[in-house]
Image 1 (cartoon, rainbow, N blue to C red):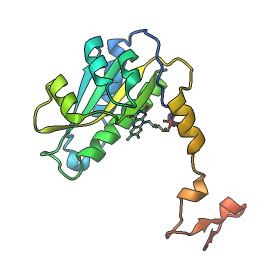
Image 2: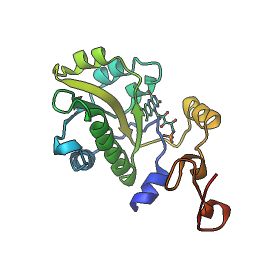
Image 3: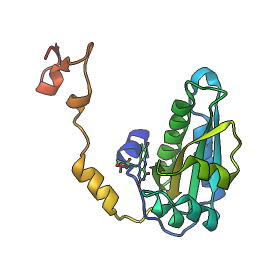
Image 4: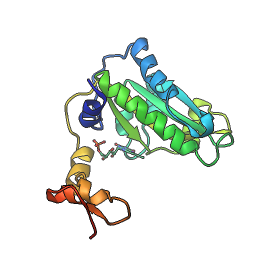
Length: 187
Ligand SMILES: Cc1cc2nc3c(=O)[nH]c(=O)nc-3n(C[C@H](O)[C@H](O)[C@H](O)COP(=O)(O)O)c2cc1C
């Protein structure tokens, strides 16, 4: 699968088979994270891989995180705020997205989860004070089933069109190609 195909194919997955993920595959995802860019190459990240069912249950307390208890692997994406105060969130998010795309190419489903109490997660996973928990990433072999959250999210807010989110040369300039020609046109 090429990268663009993986990007197109990726959809948040919230129902998973109980099939475990091999260590080799997990390491590939973690390697994808390790190779991602970071401001000044500080690499202010740490990834905690959680498979223990009790811990996953504890991580699923958030209103939009209930499915984590039935997700084979949850990865806590942590960032070192002291090491890179300005950029740790960006760096950790980039590493997380690298993982997401690599996972898609490996035939896995993922879901980025922001629904958690950071203090609870830190206590549960014994995360040191200098690290922040940026996100939880659900990973597993997805069951092709769109749950209610996904249906609602896609119905209420479908993907914006490219011409709604792109300007050329300055804000508001639309590319003529979106009107069938190739010049930059002012709107
Ligand atoms: C920062 C962030 C936080 C999110 N938090 C949650 C969450 O807590 N629970 C959940 O089910 N999905 C969560 N999502 C997934 C989004 O709902 C999902 O990406 C969006 O609806 C678009 O759907 P798609 O990923 O299938 O394209 C989150 C995504 C992002 C980027």
